[in-house]
Structure formats: C-alpha cells, structure tokens
Length: 96
Image (cartoon, rainbow, N blue to C red; front, side, top):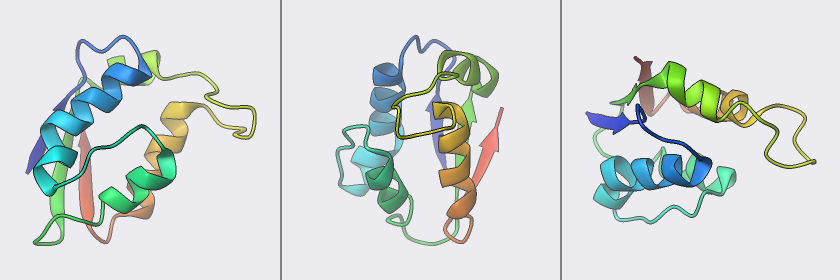
C-alpha cells in the first residue's frame, strides 16, 4: 500500500513531489508531472493489484481544480481521476 499525503499541497508541483516521495521513487522512477507518464507508472508495482491512498483528496481536488493546458478540456483533478480509474486493473485508489 502506498499513502500519498496531499493534505498540505498548494500546487501541482507539490502534488508531483508528494507522489514521487511516497510512490514513484519506491518503484524506481522519477515523475516529472507528465500525465501520460503517470499512466505508465501506475502499472509498475508488483504484486498487482495494489492500493494507493490519497490523503486529503478534497483539499487536493480544490488545489488542482484548474485547466492545466489548453489541449485539455477537463480540469487537472478530473484528468487525474480518469487516469486512476483507467488503471483499476493494477491499482485500487482510495480518496480520503
């Protein structure tokens, strides 16, 4: 199980740092914030499926509730939730 503490984040960069510290670095990676890369990292840990808990998800949703790039119609938090949902074969994400 991986616990991502987002209760105090104030930016996307801090979200990336929190995910790196608690999850991605432990599976041998270093995420730069690219959403396509996050999709790949979610399938790395063994054994599958595993659990990823996002602590402070309501706060995280408020901080990341903006359109990250003009090519994305959805806000960043909605895109992240779609990525988590599309990887449910490998990861069960709990939002707390």
